[in-house]
Length: 343
Image 1: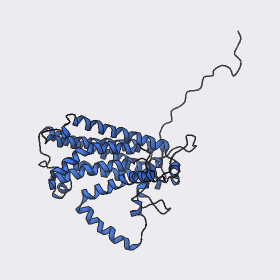
Image 2 (image 1 turned 45 degrees about the horizontal axis):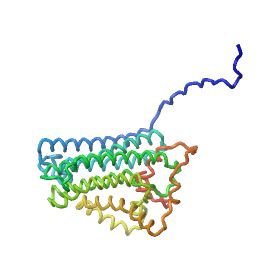
Image 3 (image 1 turned 180 degrees about the horizontal axis):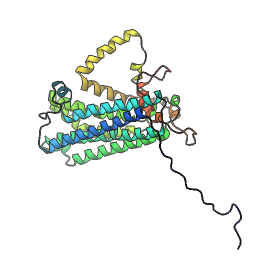
Image 4 (image 1 turned 30 degrees about the vertical axis):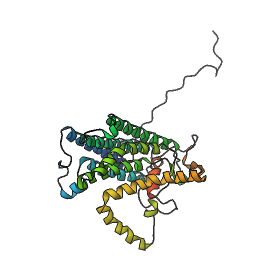
């Protein structure tokens, strides 16, 4: 019996062994998991709000935190959820910074961070919008704009937002360059900024509804929030370039600039909801306005953002710092100076 010529037969390849994850960086992982816990806590607050709504309880009469100051700043479960998401944002901004400081960046941290962001910046804000609209509709005799399918449409827009968040996070992992100095910005609205824009509107609505009782304003926000949520989701998956704005405030400045920053602290304390909305939506609109102006004037080019894409043949594996670049550029001065805060 003839034997096959050597090299022509299909040789069996040895089975590939699965790599086991033996060690992880403790402190950055705990910060990332803390952000996930905050996201789940925000979902739980939304569930409490929906439970009170189903029981026919007025949100203004429900005692949440049992402290006068805390009740003033977070009068409803939705307002508490907004503060909880803010805490998740702080943890999400710190974990990458700590990982770089301790030289413990890893692919595990990158993947874990993306899953956490989907929960804290995707699912939590979307459910907050759905809860807000359902609570607002409970006090109305007719659906807004005479549309009977308003609750279902709100749920659909919130679902699109969650899907856009997942696409945004996955796309950033694929396109991110491992070289931190190669980034001059990022394409599409960052997921953290998108969540900040939505959560700030929800918090603004709740604070004005419970304290100021401006019916026309709160009703208008409740009607507009689903559409704004859809727009924010589309901005995340767009190619509109965004540049850092906060870096101008946080970088090293002359000593006399400290006094205006100190005067801003009482303004934030007295007008928390107004400052949150202005701050978040200024960043959202900055990239959109700059993109429209550049398109109309014919000066827009995509070449200065081409560095943010990573070739598929890159020999450098992605690290934890890849996923954190979009947040770092919110808090980092690109002029080569020392980073002032997270990531």
